[in-house]
Length: 231
Figure 1 (tube, one colour):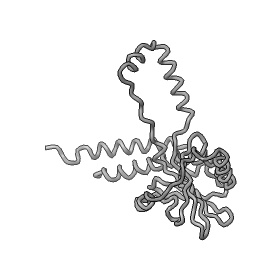
Figure 2 (cartoon, helix red, strand yellow):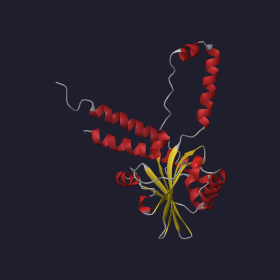
Figure 3 (tube, one colour):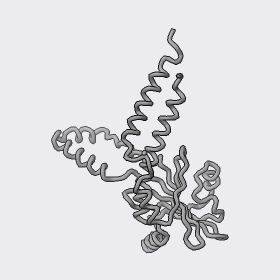
């Protein structure tokens, strides 16, 4: 009879080896320099709870409360490959191998230089006036705004709980940002830049998302190893 715990020890050992490898390849166990530099040069504070996908940057600007909430899970999303069919497949097969390999190399180089998109919700709250919510995507050091929404109830802005999502379903989110007059788009962008929401912040969020993903992965390895270990 095979023991119910026959693979527990083997799995625990393998997870322990992976955790050891990750720890050995850590550059430094202390806070990375890019975080220290950012906090010393910017008025933002970091709200990060171990075990959570979400991280927030907060600051005050006059009487405004500003919060940038981003989700590290979106940094792992990859675009779905587009499948060809019919004549398109046949035409594609006619491309000679050398040319095809060259094209693939170029695509790989471009992909390596580009950062994966990260969902970021920007909330600007004023006392007694509700809040503006900027739904955006961070890609290649740029905030790409999708919508600018107004909320009388500031608590709904930037809240990603299931309850808040349900309440927002009946709300008008505002027009698609790209359909706004160009001057209005530019002024909204300058409005955010005036509040310190700029390229430096976008690049920091991308770097922090990668750092947090690694930190969460190592904690996951430790927790799962302890769970399956029968010793």
